[in-house]
Image (cartoon, rainbow, N blue to C red; front, side, top):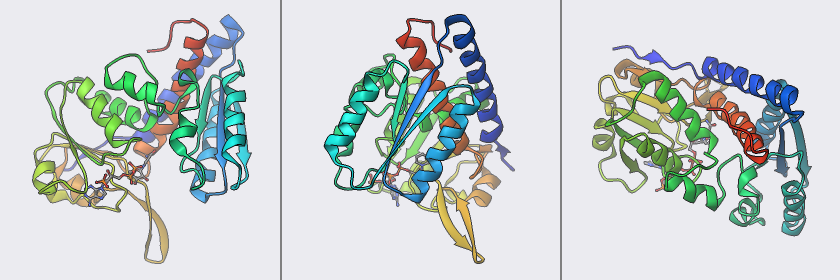
Length: 292
Ligand code: NDP
């Protein structure tokens, strides 16, 4: 079998187009421009690339982008003061603090100081709790993008066996919650899981979110399964820098029914979902019906 490629880049372009339509309507009919504030502390090169990309795409869909770049040695007090200011700014509908933060800053404290209604990353404990109990929340962007691609590909996910490899708070756990919400039978695997290959072989849906280049080989994949590869790993091949996922693309594509490539799969969907979450937050803040 040769897998169908789930084209996250094309799907993300469609999501952005929809978001741009909602932004136009908010401007024309209500005189409101959604605004997203992104806070970057320090100069981590990968974070700088992500923040630049987020700012550019925010502007491209017609929203306001507010970038706050702080020195690496910024104190917790100053960062919390900035978040407080953004929480109280009515032109800011979404706030994102780019992770990871420098070691001297307490990420949990910082994230939980964001107004949950503006927490477009969905990492605030209130949003985590709302998602876990199936209530209206802000849903973390990467898992949301994965779910959208799975729904688009399969229609209903009800009754499917899903294995999420990775249990981080930002990807693995919320991914599992979303799949459970769509009535999958969900297994969360991690570094202590016994016989990981056998666990993965049971899955109709495999979500690989481990942060280890090409760790999941094709012979772990059930014939016809769908592989969602969240991994973004920079490796050197033949003297060149290359991006690879957490699944070994060639061998997995030979057995899977469908697979997301890296790059061009989950990555583009993440930012598209961030923009969609900002529009949702803006609609909720203004008592307007929110996009589907
Ligand atoms: P973390 O490092 O926070 O979590 C990795 C998880 O993988 C942990 O739960 C860990 O288990 C598990 N794991 C590590 N090694 C193994 C192993 N040998 N066998 C089984 N499980 C293992 O990573 P993130 O969740 O933040 O990110 C995962 C990947 O997704 C990374 O490649 C990251 O770059 C990428 N990513 C991509 C995004 C996108 O937009 N496409 C956004 C966010 C992340 P344990 O808990 O037991 O240690």
